Structure formats: C-alpha cells, structure tokens
Length: 98
Image (cartoon, rainbow, N blue to C red; front, top):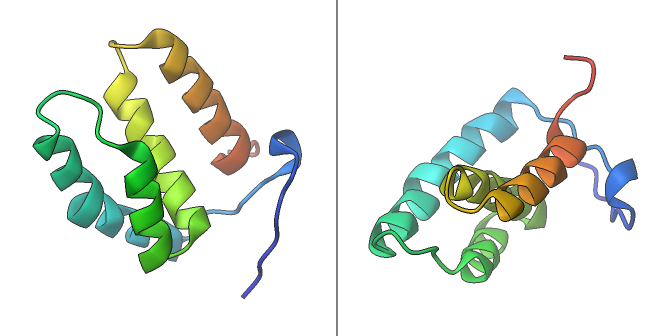
C-alpha cells in the first residue's frame, strides 16, 4: 500500500495495475454509467460523482474514473474541455513506455 500526494501534475505518475483497471470498470458500470444516463444528455455532476467514488474507494480511483468519463462525455461536444482533460489523464495515468 502506498499513498502520496502529488502537488505537480506533470511529475505525478500513478501506475495502473490489472486490479486498478478492474475496479475502474466496476466504478464505471455501477456509479458513472447510471449517473450519465440519469443526466439525459447533460453533463452529470462530476464533482458529486468524484466525492461519491472517493468515499467508496479513494481519491485516486475517483479522479481517474471521473476524468476518463469526462473524456468520453466531452468527445465531439466540447473540444476545449476534452483537450484539457485528455492531457490531464495522459500525463497522470498513461505509461510513456507503452
């Protein structure tokens, strides 16, 4: 178990494991997908989703899954937000070696 707080987005790197990816999928199916459907085409309350997921899992799971959801939600609808969020996700969670 490791815990750290990163204050510089561009120096943070959180390794994704098979377990992380499986939990991310559970979070998407159980929490994010229903919220997106209930929002009827509008953006769900991303902050509330982040808080809900952080309470059940932790802040890293919350940030990663909500950030990824925002990427999918904003694609083709809101390019400035999409671009900012995909850069955040890539810098923070993608392995540059792959």
